Image 1 (tube, rainbow, N blue to C red):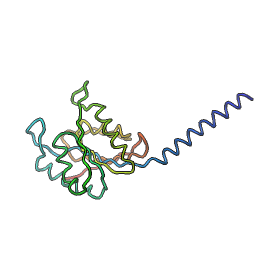
Image 2: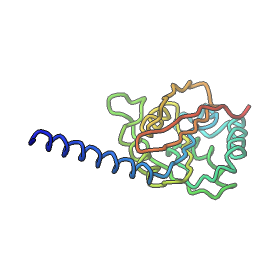
Image 3: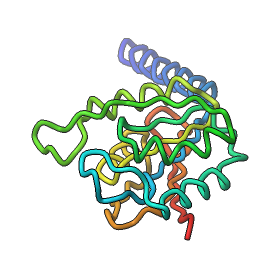
Image 4: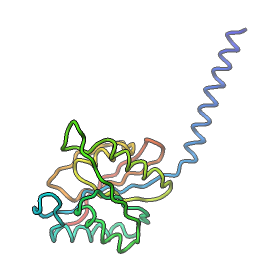
Length: 184
């Protein structure tokens, strides 16, 4: 009898946890995150180059295709190429731009620290039910998508600037990723 009572308590506890999880998931408001790499950049100055004319054209195309996406927040790195890629959409939409100072990963200086990526993800997750744009770098975008819960995490070709990822975060740590191409 005691064993049946314990089993019943365990089943009821499991059911209660399931119900709480289901309610929490129902209350979650999906977040749409557009993730792109900065547009084509000049070769000089090496530290912080501006956009090439092709990059300016690509940033204008990005603004055209995302103009109706109701983007409320745009996140860039501290580098000019990401900020310049954002400018045309900011002018069209009036979205708020937040520039994050990306720190390198101490064990591999070519990668971005997990702390920097987590800072971005925390900011995005504070915008339930909204759309945001992240303009990043080829060595950062996969980590951003992974930390958002992306079901597929891409490898970004450093020679390509036309990738547009739409990441729909539908539950904490769970997201569907759609990969598109844009621009010429």
